[in-house]
Length: 118
Image 1 (cartoon, rainbow, N blue to C red):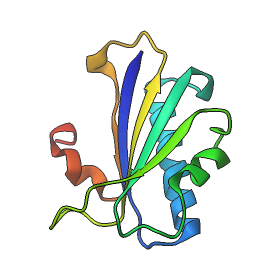
Image 2 (cartoon, rainbow, N blue to C red):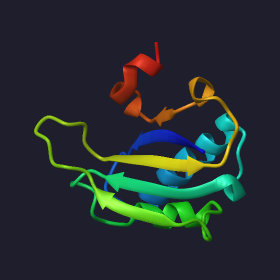
Image 3 (tube, helix red, strand yellow):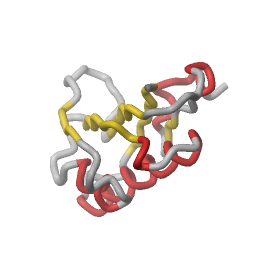
């Protein structure tokens, strides 16, 4: 089992934006790592305190995660932190070695892990 990390910035606190951004991120995480939803054990989705219009899990269900256990939580409110961010920690059954896992950061969230985007 391996964990795949990801994050995406939303342009606005809007339910449609939440669904689109989360769906885009999850699809990219699956594709870049060569896994399918049947390989996914569980997913933890967090959002910054400024995102209150929708649950991130709603976007996950729309892209095929209806039978995957999902858990939403709120990030801690740290002064100066990047705003409107959804973070994802996906647990998958895969034989891929840890150094080959592709973590995915989109729509401005790349700044959270600049070490992965050099």
